[in-house]
Length: 181
View 1 (cartoon, helix red, strand yellow):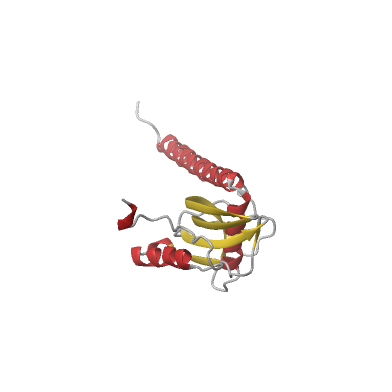
View 2: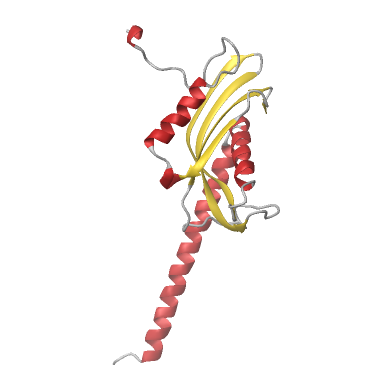
């Protein structure tokens, strides 16, 4: 017996509704995983993410609220006397909330998939767990499609060369030379 046009239409609506529900669940799951990743970051790395978010939100051209998405590389050097040098490369992702949203959360401000990720590299010195103002922390963020190998290398070199104090270890300085054999 042939189906009526009405039941076909209802079936398509149900399929579309199910698809929408699955996509929404995936977005929410992605947001929850990112929240867990942020909350599991050690304090010294979380402070760098917060610094990058603060700088990003200070730009007038930014219209969306961004949240931490994922760490790519973390490095730190403990130099003694409660001093630590930190490098963190991570992604920020645009959310459905507007810039300036008060008390944003991963549940309220879900990630958008129609905007490119922001790739950030930060390096800074901490003393007793607080970011020092001197030397000035380095925060470099740009849309991922604009990140080239040359830009990435320049970012790392900047952090390697960042001279904090005379004789202090340089962040990411452990590289093999010809004399290491």
